[in-house]
Image (cartoon, rainbow, N blue to C red; front, side, top):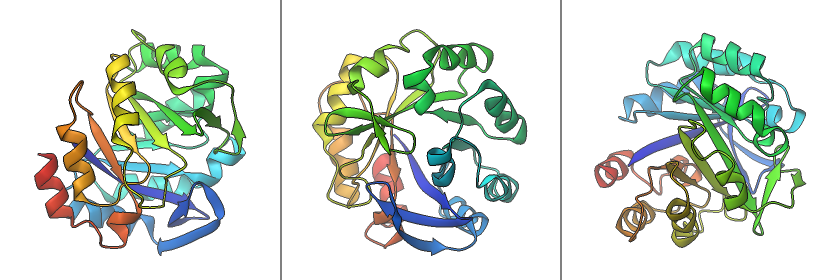
Length: 240
């Protein structure tokens, strides 16, 4: 299982928010590149970077912070937030992003995702952000009428490298993973699933790995990592 420490960007800073509410952001590092170096030095093999402002506005807002992260570390970076068109995808991959995450466009223009996955094999992921059973879009400010399975199944055999399933109702709360919810999706699609939203302790990683059924491919680590509830070495050992 791959662990992805999250670097969420708001106004050029590394923050954590609760359930996507940008009005309640806690700044953990004013220098996102420094935070990236820290997680890489701790032994993490990937970084999960999200432009929160960009997700709401539909365009890259924290591009300079992302570029600084890409220059600061050699570990692969997956990036989401505000990526809506093929040109955006191209620019980020050319800049050094290893995997581009598409969310809103996966709901509204799925053909863009399929075309991107054909053009950039193994470098496109789909973000499926779930609130009260339905997929949210536009930086979680709008709801769709689709459930997670419906969105995920659009991309079976499309070449998408991963589905990042976020439990919005738990995101940033450290209430613990809803392991069965993630597992249900993993069991019903062939695309690898990365779990996000609510991670509270190393025990959540243990439970993810122990569940019966299709293995969960990865987990995003957020507030619990930043506040010290999870020690990087312990998490990495369990994941391995």
